[in-house]
Length: 158
Length: 196
Image (cartoon, rainbow over all chains, first blue to last red):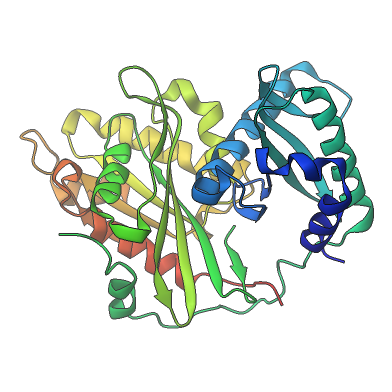
């Protein structure tokens, strides 16, 4: 089962389900490309920006931590108050590291939510396959014309 | 690294504006943002200092039209140009599909341009890229200023590999979209792979 389907089915049965309207969930690549989002606010309108910011945040933290020579690899990254904030976890899908993130609002027990998220992440890692993102080796487009490029940018205002 | 989804017919590519500090990278993106309209308009994310010097990156997701049935989305990033931010600059190159090198045409900035170009090669190498395989275009910005190097000098000093080059005055939008279209074409023609 791929992780998107697994996420959806696990979320339905999870204790997170009752709180899901206040928890925006996403999975991104380390370069910030969003692979999955549950479209809960603010992801419904800003998921690309959130993906880019989360990836930058994680990479900066990881680079900073490299100065510590820490042996543990089970990192998590939080920027939060007592009832909400941003929470990021690494997500290993068949050796490819992604990020599983949550933007949490108005929760009484943030620690419990984080624990549930970690358990969900662990279940996804144990049960899912990653789609093969590098299937073909041929060029996708040949001989793109200048007109085709101009058409791509036709929305540009004068 | 570009993300091609055959199932949803979507293409996502990452373009990074690179160059010396105060050369016009952020100005380029701000102009692109200003000129996008309607459904395609997303906010620019800018992580910068109080005096608007980029400290980490600027980011603009740009939803373009369709090309041969594929919805095309470009993620535009700038890097901080100041040497002080070298460590964070390297991170932004991760996953890059194409680079726009924004050079400052002022004569006194030539050294800074050269150093920045050298840093680009080093940073790409550290991220596992070969500079000879990454689509790059160069922009000769600030062509409106009085004390600028000739195009011939800019090309001789900064474009030994004959990348496509474009003159620009980013503050006025001159050359901004020409440069972006140029790299877009190269990036799209360089795209490989995807989901089966």
